[in-house]
Image (cartoon, rainbow, N blue to C red; front, side, top):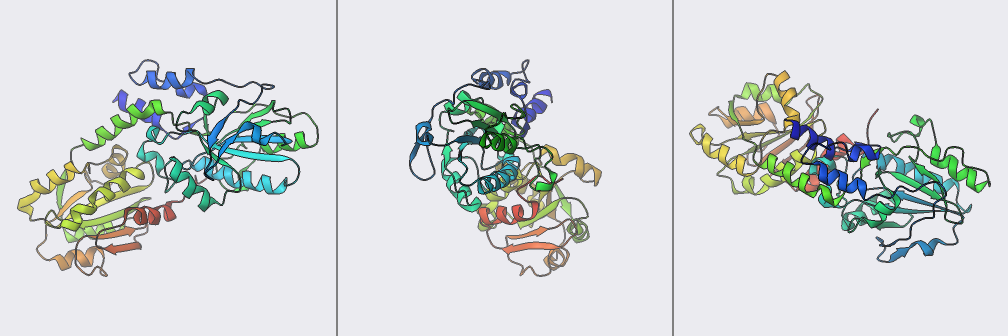
Length: 404
């Protein structure tokens, strides 16, 4: 249990200090965390900007010298997956627009290695933090500035002391550090939630030739995903893969009750059977989806139409797929008086199931239904799902930002 808690804390999304990276000194996970922390160089105010030469999503290699004419250079470590970063990016782009022509230049750098990301840390984005995903993310976000990739070696992130995304470093015309830390004090997207505009204040002070009022703040956001976390990610994946599956029989009336929902969670229902080849083919996408949104208000509920005599066969298939219940869901299921999200329809008349789950279901398998907390159907699909489309539909509802 202790190891599971520590794993979760190291893989979690939110961190704000180097101490977080080294919080597990007495565990087997400590070497990965402390190795990343010990390799960081923490820039001090007045230090020169470390050099870099990194690939950009524009197909070019970008170096520090390229920006020699900038009066003010902001190096912003951001990422594709982090909701805190997403929120800051909106306000960073607004700052660029406001200060256009005043000498401010922004260079964004993704410090993360995607192998250091657990899939449940991707629940606020369609994308991981790999280079190709950067291109897609930047296109959707309409980035107008260089977006560079440091995930291969993470040498630049270490040279700057990047703790999280976002983490902001602002340099004057001599490339001396004048500000580092948060962009502002809000992790939400609404500008009205901002009370302290620290990076913007620093930029405006430098433009005016004044001293920066607050030079150092603590960054907040998703911890830098160091490649050294790869082993922890693999351990978490193995744990999921080995989680036992409990299948319970379910009646049409019980399905109808689940379909009404009434919880805070989105519910994704999938009807399948081991005799249905398309059902089995799509199942990895369902498992991926369940894990991706595992830290959000979401659950996958599967209903097998196998013969009750074949319950063991259905259980074996689900366990091979790694479809065991996620630990985070267990308390909410317990509160509802349930022990599993894997069911086998007990009735003899499939029409009863159709009427209980989705009267618009034509009857063929697989059939998938996304249900809102109020019980309304948000999306339905008969036939194998496209995983990216499915996850996009879910993200459209859950959102890409933290909510107050």
